[in-house]
Length: 111
Length: 111
Image 1 (cartoon, chains in turn red, blue):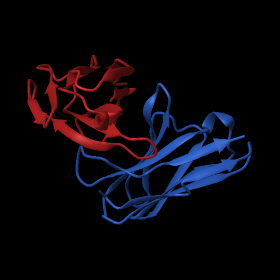
Image 2 (cartoon, rainbow over the protein chains, first blue to last red):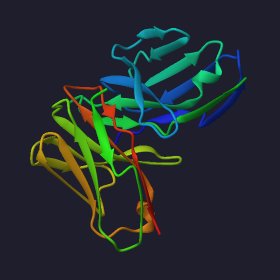
Image 3 (cartoon, rainbow over the protein chains, first blue to last red):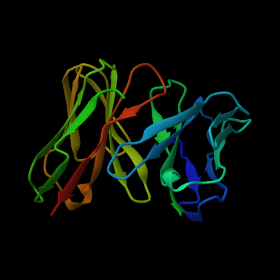
């Protein structure tokens, strides 16, 4: 069974601060995805990283896939209240059609 | 957005009663999934389908059954609901590989 551990579970910061969320596993994944979920809604895909060492940027969000494809991080620069939500990482197995989700990081950005 | 709807959106039922949740998609995606989301556990896979009448068990399938008689519909049934099945249930679909699209969720309370 592949497991993904996210840290921290909760994060409360002030607007303008930077933060990093981590997603770690002992298993290798063919790709890793980050989702964002708002209250009362389903998760929405932010990014998919595929290659070991890959870095992707989405405005103020920077995603990195570890060289060994076992871990990933999400860094947010100058967080804004609109970034508030639950961030989930998910690893895809070799077949690509099954995802293993981490437990999530609940982020609150205070104005 | 894969045009996914879930019904009902909220349901309160009593222990021992049968419950069926419906997921409907309009994008003709091959794969469909049922997850449950609980605090501290992220998203856990209950059952999934890789085609009409083709289904398989996920991580937490005990007490649940599914059916897929048409590409667009995936039903999740709790034969005899228990309080431990109180949760938020999400349906997801996938066209090819990796990217899953989620429905808005069904909040189920079993008293």
